[in-house]
Amino acid sequence: MSRVTEVDHPDRSALAAIGRVLAAIGGARFELQPVLDRISAEAADLCGADMAFMFLRDGDVFRFTAASGSTAEHWAWERDHPNTIDRGSIVGRVALASAPVQIEDVTADTEYASGAYTVGSVRTLLGVPIRTHEGLIGAFGIGRTRVAPFSAEEIELVSLFADQAGVAIRLGHLVTETQEALERETAVGGVLQSIARSTFDLDSVLQTVIDSATRLSHAEEGNIMRDDGGRFRVAAYTSGVEEPYRDILDRRRFVPERGTVAGRVLMERRPVQIVDVTTDPEFELLDAQRVSGFRTVLGVPLMRDGSPIGVLIVWRREVRAFTDPEIALLTTFADQAALAIANVGLFQTVERQRAELARFAPHVAGLLSSPEGEALLAGHRREISAMFCDMRGFTAFAETAEPEELFSVLREYHAAVGAIVLANGGTVEHFAGDGFMIFFNDPTPIPDHPMAALRSAFAMRERFAELSAGWRKRGYELGLGIGVAVGYATLGRIGFEGRYDYAGVGAVANLAARLSSAATADEILINQRMYAMVEESVVAEPVEGLSLKGFTHAVTAYRVASLRVG
Image (cartoon, rainbow, N blue to C red; front, top):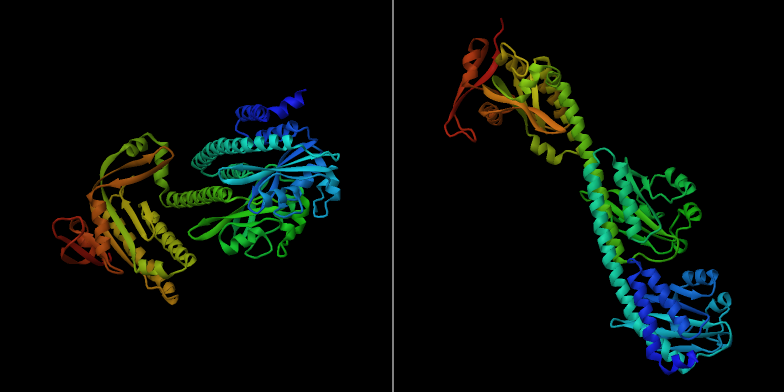
C-alpha cells in the first residue's frame, strides 16, 4: 500500500526524502560526505533499488562520490574507473542524453562495456542526471541485481528527487566551502603565529605547514624538502608517512630533472602535478610509489628571490587531480614555509653577527655583572672619541661581485677592524655592510682616548692596504675612508627585552660619520676639537670650508698624515 502511495504522490515522497537530506546537511558539522551518502541512500529507497551510486562531474569524466548498497569491492572498482562520456556506461549515456536512461539487462546490451555488472552483480540499471542552474553536475547509477525494469513512476520519482538533490549538493558545497575557508584562515593564522613564535625551531614551523596544507587540500600525505647545498632533501613529513617510504626518500637528494615531481618543480619553478604516476613514462621514483601506493602527486616550489629554496609535495593514493583552488591554497602554504626558512636564516645570521660583535667588545658584556655597570647601562654622558669608517668603491663592487666573493671580502675586513679596535680598548657600537661605528673612552675609561682612536685609525689603514692589495689582484678597487671626532655623547643600553645593544647618541657620532663620508680613499679626517688635543702628536693639515650633510655651517677638519714618533 505504501508503494502505491509513493507512486501516486511522487512530489510528496521526493520532498520527504529531500527534507531528510537537508536535515543531514544541518547535522553534518560542515562535512559534505555524510550528505552525499544520505542522498545515495534516499535515491535507492525511493524506487526499491538494491544499490545507488552517485557520480559527480570532474571535467570530462564522472567520478564515484557516494553509494548505498552493493559491496566494498564494487565501491573500490568504481573509484578506480571514472566514467567517460560515451555509451560504455550508464553514466556516460546519461551525459550524452542529458536525460534518464535505463538498461533492462546489462548482460544483453552489446554496447555496455563497464565491468561494474560483474563486480556488483548488477542486471538492471537506471541512470538519472543531477542538475543545477550550472547544468549537469552528476548522475545517479541505480541498480537491481535481478532483471526488474524500473517503472515510469519510479523513474519520475527519482528524477524529481535528483533535481532537488542537485540543490542540496550545491548547498552542501557552499556550507563546506565556507567552513573550509574558515579552516584555511585559521590554519594560515596558526602558521603565521608559529613563524612568529619560533626563532630557532624551524622543524616545528615546517611540521605545522605540511600538516595544515595536506589536510586542507584533501591530500593523504605530504612532505617538505629543503635546499641542502644545491641538492634538496626531505625536512618534514606528515605523521602518517610510513618508515619504508621515509627510508627511501631520506637516502635521496633531489635535483632539477624529469624523473621526480620535486625535480620537475625545481626545473620549472612552478606547481607541477602528475595525475597518475603509474602512467607517466618519465617518472622514475617507482620504488617509493610501490611502498606508499601514491598515484596523484602535486609539487609546489618554495620561492625566495626568484629561486626555489624548497618544495612542498602532497599526494593521494587514488587517481584524483588536485583542483585549481587546492593548488592555490598549497601555494600559499609554500610561501609561508619559504618565509619561515628565510626568517630562521636571517635570525641565525643576526645572531652570528651579534656574537662577533660581543667578541670585539667583551667589556660591554661584562657590565652586566657589576653595580657600576648597571648604572652605565641605564644611561650617562661622557666625552668620547667617535670613529666611523667605510669603504670607497664598495657599492660598485657589491653590484658586480658574486655573493660568495662579497662575503669573503667583508669577513676579512670585519675581522681586521674588530681585532684592531679591541686591541686599543675601543667599543664597536655597530657594523652594517662596509660601515663601522666605534667609540673610545666608554664603557671602559681611556685616559688618552683621542690618541687611542688615532692609533686604531692608522693601524686599520695599514691593515686595509695589505688586504686591498690582494683584492686588487681579483679586480676589486677598494679604499678606506675614516672620520674621527671628539665630543660628548649619551651612552647606555638601548633596545627591548631579548634584543639589547650598547650605543652612543649625540652630535659627535654624526660628525664622525660625515667626516668619514667626506674622506677620500686612505684618508683620515678629524674634527677641530680633536686636533687641539693631539696637535703635538700628529702631522696634519687643515681642510677648511668643508660642507657636511646635516650641518648648517661649514666645518674645519684636519687631514692627519701620520703620527709623530717619540
